[in-house]
Amino acid sequence: MQRRDLLRLSLALGGTSLLARSPLAFADALIGKKPTTPAKLRAGEFPKDFLWGAATAAYQVEGAWNEDGRGESIWDRFAHTPGKIKNNDNGDVACDSYHRYREDIALARHIGAKTHRFSIAWPRVQPGGRGAANAKGLDYYKRVTDALLDAGIRPFPTLYHWDLPQPLEDAGGWPRRDTAERFADYAKIVIDALGDRIRQWAIFNEPKTFTHCGYWQGNHAPGRTDPLAFLRATHTVNLAQGMAFRAIKAINPKLEVGGVFDPQPAYPATRGEADLLAAQRWHKFANLWFLDPALKGRYPDGVLPADRQAELLGWKDGDENLMRAPLEFLGLNYYSSWLVADAPQGNGVPGLDTNAEWARYYAPHHQTDNGWDIYPKGFYDILVDIAEHTGHLPIEITESGAAYNTAPGADGHVHDNARIAWLRAHLLELSRAIRDGVPVRAYHHWSLLDNFEWADGYTQRFGLVHVDFKTQRRTPKDSAAWFAQLIAKNVVPATASTVAAENGRLLSAD
Image (cartoon, rainbow, N blue to C red; front, side, top):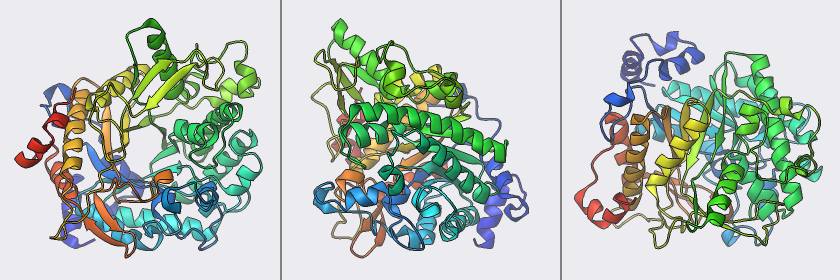
């Protein structure tokens, strides 16, 4: 960091040199104690201490899948299985961020980011999912953390972003209760190594998605399609969430621990009573199934048959205490919404009886390039709902963004006006939610980089920065410049008239 940049950051943090502060004190300075009164904000404005940044995830950007002692993950095995990923892509190289992380952090700093969300790969830290730590893996994350701190950016890690060590899947995976204990041991290893540098920690990323897609629908790793194993997986993950929370607090009770969830509004397909009740069931199952066990020690009522819930989940006496995790903040990811209909014929989960279509609202509706419906008001709706349900815990938007596959033009630039319009529409709704009392303190765009997008491989681009996956050349898009202006002024910028004309219906979507 150059001296003038260090001085600028020092003044922003109250005149005290960053070099004189501990990493944890630096994090405390970024997370303000006295946010701007929401009622004083105007449309499109954000609190003065609001944190802006972007997000990545280990398997999606790191590459180096078998270097420096890293073990095999379920995504390595899944992606190396022909036919599982579009174009038979895999994350072996991805964005090569294992070797280029300094370049990527420089890009984040270039747009003015003050926070950066990333994940720690369990098989890089503990290759077999049990036993001693891999020192080279921990050293990598120490280097990433220190580079972020040197750039004046808060490191904000997630312990698990879907890359279960393959040996643990071979032993039964998330449906096996022992996996919860293995995860708590892994969490302790990471916090022992990095807890002196990082204040805020997220435990899981989207437990709903990696259990639903991995064990029920089978379109994500490990590719299983067993509804009963899926239900047990959800319970193991809830046990692991509580156990990891306590393991972290046992090391340092001052660390702030939360989780990242992806609640999306569930709208009934019709106004009929059956569909209204189905949407309520789905909301409890998709949006509250991993929140209520942590905060209340129990599952939402009215989803599974009451007389079979313990059997279906593999419940044991005392699990209500093991699941408890008094989370201190919520990370929320938002992309689209659910359209839910009653399904009396069933869907594989006993008693759920819903047909829930992801990324659907009432047709016809505008869509992103990967076919997800665009519904900005859904962002507002779910923020208000979750804030009320959880007692207004602090919230960070940990992912939100859109797939637009705009290629570089003849001038070499990426003119992704549609992404700018998507962002503008959704951030106006976020600002409205904050003005109405939802305690959101940060926003992380998904993603900093175009990257490996799970079953879609490299066919969908969410990044502020275009990546040429053949050369690894990074090119900031027009949206990166727009996002930098947003960060600098802390208010949603006006959109160019040409963009507004092309995307007017999106901007007014309600």
